[in-house]
Length: 293
Image 1 (tube, rainbow, N blue to C red):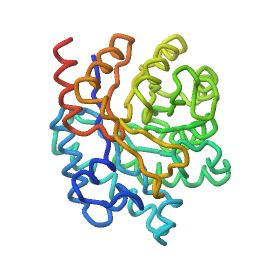
Image 2 (image 1 turned 90 degrees about the vertical axis):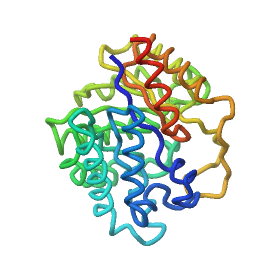
Image 3 (image 1 turned 90 degrees about the horizontal axis):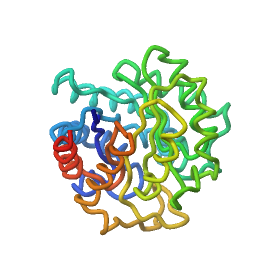
């Protein structure tokens, strides 16, 4: 049985001309157009998603602080949780809400991951704000072991009874481990003490994910999964700088569905999309995988 995750939020909001490129991405929509965030959650549910992820990727002090909004960190996290919960409730009890615990600085930059004594209070606050709305937690786009340990520890401390999932982002060269260069085996071993319910890879090319899943399947009996991006990321990119990114033209809907079928055959049971993967991708994958069951 395959559980379908939703797709990307920030890029989809930009595509729909709701928020500008750069600055606060999906957090900008929470400030200016929260009804659109709710609508997009519903679009993913209509496409077949049975887990939707709270749009808290950019509602973190490091990003909000760039516009003097760090004091709204908890408020915006609560709003994001409430919108996801509303969308799930209106769809019925068949849809779960996953509370996102993201990197606390730049994506793909393990060297910028805050020190433990800085990260833990932020993760605890974020987890506490989201807990009333969440069915589970997902520590996502973790680029190094220490980052994933801090996020998983905070989720367990705040809501020990709720499932916790960890999703790492991989080096783009297949077989090279996490973005930090640490091995997948070491990453899996490091989070064992937090009793996680599943392990995934996200915000990574599908080629790297394919190799990563083959390795991961040999390391754990936990459910495994993937939600790739469709981005071409140059060196030096950050979420809010002027370095341009692009969408891969070779990763169309059909190619994405082919990868999803491959991952399901490898044992993945949780599959969705990240940056650049919109509702049309999720809907096509949902139909394709259903035909295989």
